[in-house]
Amino acid sequence: GVGAAGVGMLLGCLLLFRGLHMRLRRGPTPVEEFANWLLHRRVVAAAVDAVFWSVVPVAAAVVAAPVTLLLGVVRTAAEVGRVVGCIRSEVHVSERARMAVVVTGCDSGFGRAVALALSRRGYTVFAGCLFPGARQPLQAEAAAGRIPAGGQFRPLVLDVTRESDVAEAAERVRQWVSSSADHSLLAVVNNAGVGSGGLIDWLTLSDFERDAAVNYFGTVRVSKAFLPLLKQAAAQWTRRAPRPRVVVVCSASGKVAVPLLSSYAASKHAVACFAACLRMELSALWDIDVCTVFPSFHQTPLLETGAGTIDRTWSAAPAEARRDYGEGFGDAAKVGRRYTPEDQNMARPKWNITRH
Image (cartoon, rainbow, N blue to C red; front, side):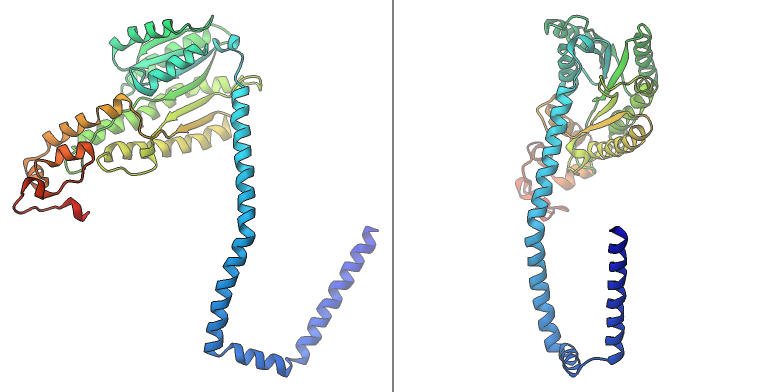
């Protein structure tokens, strides 16, 4: 049956090609010649072109709209299923204590909240703090949160800009992993971050270097230091447990440029690019996930100190810059108010923000 169908299709193609060949040999009919001549007149060609580009996009939209909607529904359902699957796939609380999570920047903000939440869920948490004085209050708050049996909360001093601190933290986690065959490193959460506020004209090169040192190079340094332990965990991974991962807390500023936050936004763009490259390499070669989080602006100490950093950079700006912008510009920038030189009755403003 298949052979007969194939022969039939072959004969049909041959007859079609033969008909086309005979048609071309005979040449166009008078009607076809007239239609060709008419369509090549400029007025007719312009009208046909207008009708074509008016009708075809509408027809395409009519066809594409339901298809696009259907694809969107399918993708949304798949994403919801993935999220639900991740929630359901979390290991039982009795098994979480053997999995360690390293979190940087736990002095305050997101890092502190993440470390405490993970400890309450029963994981062993290594909470990196920049300031030694932040460890004891953090430990007390974790203890008050009723850590499940077996869970451990271990604050440690961790300045992500210092190679010695990062190496010592990695060694402490390595010793913990080596203390039992069941222990493994589940995740490294790169959360530590700083931000300098102010116009580029006010910021110094040190401001850009500081933000890059913590936000970008700190993320690179910590990720690389813990890669051996993550690869070791990936080699022992089974489907009963979540895959080891690197979590990079970036920022919406890592996607969109924000005025007054140039040094912060530039460092976060670098972090986002680094995380994307790391994801492609580790997921393909080691089955290690890399998750990038892009939070918007939240009421954390980093945001609360934003006005202070603008004060600092404005106060340190050269006298010429302060004269060009006007003395009221720094206060206006802190609250996001549009400032005009008329607010200070400047005689000869060199720059008017209302024009930009």
